[in-house]
Image 1 (cartoon, one colour):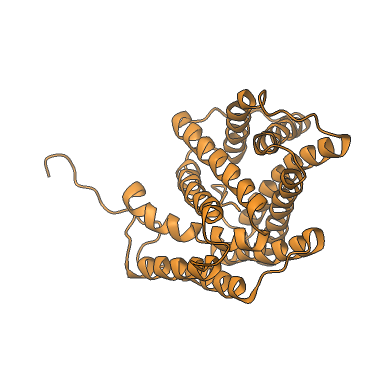
Image 2 (image 1 turned 90 degrees about the horizontal axis):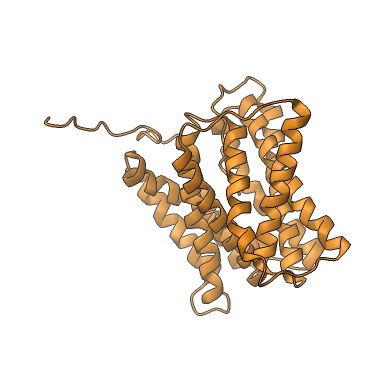
Length: 304
């Protein structure tokens, strides 16, 4: 799941942009599914998170070298570091959730992240939180309750993982929104990759499991899929307006159900489907927000 948007003007090829967006979301889901295969197969959580970033970093550096492009230094290094840490935390929570829950349940709860972004944008970015956003928040909360169903076997410690993922991912998206005004996409992707690698590498020694050749291949695949998904979505936002692309993020549920069924034999129950629809509908309610979604509140000058 991602909200990576380059600071470029939308093009006039919406169908092509939508196709790239669906492809990017699908690649991202395949990356998460690969992580689930590894972690449920016995690979330590930390090692899977490390592989996601280390191989992503290698793939990105190889791509930059192939294109003979140099990285532009970040203008907001501290925010890049904070964003990278939030992304690592979100990734760890995501993979933990995928180990404990089916993919459909994990994504259904994770879809509340755009609603959290809408609420947190008020206190953190100075954007107005109006009635529409509060309605979306209540709807998203209701959808999450339908998925987790207090009193069911899903509700409990396992439910905290996707909720934590949604919170950290919301913080990551807010940082991405700010950085999109100053740093190019390659710079932001590079900082995400190296921060994730640097944070997880010292944690490997106590838990390292010598991977089999197949596990090495899947670990490398995770890094490649992560890079490919981001590039596809960058291309999508260069070709089509965000208003047309944002709803396609919820196609991730279709990819997740298909992967979970084909690989793990998991199918969501009716309550999960209904909850996912409610959460997705709450997120879609935020589209075309007339109340200034992205419009900052005017701040008083000192002494005014």
